[in-house]
Length: 239
Image 1 (cartoon, helix red, strand yellow):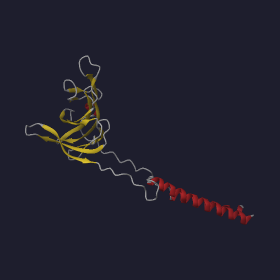
Image 2 (cartoon, helix red, strand yellow; image 1 turned 135 degrees about the horizontal axis):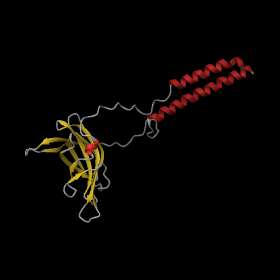
Image 3 (cartoon, helix red, strand yellow; image 1 turned 120 degrees about the vertical axis):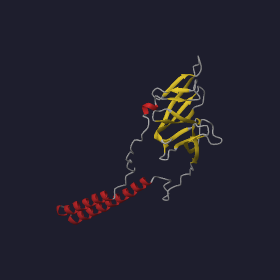
Image 4 (cartoon, rainbow, N blue to C red; image 1 turned 90 degrees about the vertical axis):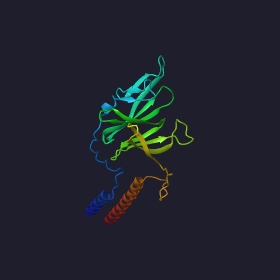
C-alpha cells in the first residue's frame, strides 16, 4: 500500500484543483460604488420643514422628526397626520433642492400622498397630489431635473385598499402664465408585467444560480467516484 500512496496524494491534489477551478459563480453581483452626495437640504431639514397639506386643518403641517399630528377637529379623537415617506436630492428647477413625498390624512379613512419640490432650505416651491392609498415604490431626480415617482396606483376595478397598476410618473417644475411655478406631470410609463416563463431545462423557473451549483455538484461527485475507483484498483493490485 505504501508504494501507491503518492499516486493517491496526486489524485487528491488533482481533485482539489478541479474543485477550485469549477467552483460555483457568485450568487449576487458586487454592490456598486455609491455616487457622490447630491447637494440639497439635509434629511434633518426635511423632517422639520413646514409643508402645505390640504388635508390638515389650517392647510399646513410643520413636521417634528418627520411627523405631524393634530386633532382633526376641536374635541375630536380622530387625528390629522402627515408623515415624510421618502425624499431625494438633486438639481430641480435649475437649483439644488429635493423631492419629498408625504403621506397625509385628514382623520378619515383616506391616506393621501403628496409630492413636493423644495429648495435647498427645504422651503416648498410647488406640490401636487399623487393619489389616495397608493404604494410608493421609488423616488428620484434625473440629471435633467425631472422627478420620477415609481408607484402602484389603482387600476380600473381595483378597490382603494389594493392598488395593482405599476407606473412611473415624471414631473417637472414649470412656470405658469400667471408667473407661479407648478409641478407638472409630463409623462407616465406603465409597467408591462409578463408572466414568468419556466426555464428551458424544465426546472420550473429555478434560478440560474441553482443550475450552476447543481452542475458543479455533479462534476465534483463524478470526480470523487473516479478517485475512489482508482484508489480501490490500486489497493487490489498491492494486496
